[in-house]
Image (tube, rainbow, N blue to C red; front, top):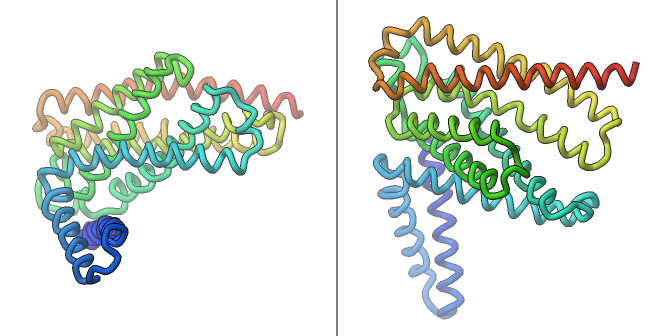
Length: 300
């Protein structure tokens, strides 16, 4: 975990350093290269001392999440306009949704992978780790990850509200609002991060849902790819949004003696947010089953 933090510092420091070098060269081509390296050293110090320092991580990470969303949105727009003929035939709001779904797909891949690591592979949240209460454990890396996810949910929620209801109805507003509140609380307080990561693993279904929309928009609703994607959605949803939620509630039950030590608002989030999202998942799962049945019936 320390190695990852050092890598982040190095990458950001190098990036800022090279930007400084480029700008300095433009202004004074004949200056000594050693002066450029001093800018890079200062940039690395800035990153290590302030941007990735403990007290600043929540703010830096949220900003990083929002900035990353903007970058991915623009890159998706650029790539799609060059390589996808369907994109050029879409209406303005369809293009916005296309780019928005590209953004959510990248976030989903990132957060589901990191959440799986923290929830099941990392020793940090293991019962065998006797450091302190499991419910209050956090680290700079886990906090930074949740901050990036908070930045995404805030960005996506802003777009949903701005273009309402084109990018999603009331259920999407409720889902993103609950997610943003729960993730942000866990990030700032350090409480219940394990359960937050368990819930965020459910984002693994987002790329398949987005692919379904892409295929439908491209006029491939009757293709084999559309049917296969529907089957993948069924199994991914069953595992990540039904069975995993059941396991999470069982885990909360086993560690209830620790959960009650959280702040009252944190306790409400641990029980309330997953319960609300669980009900929504069941409703959506019913629609997924119905749609898959209908699709299979047409092909038999």
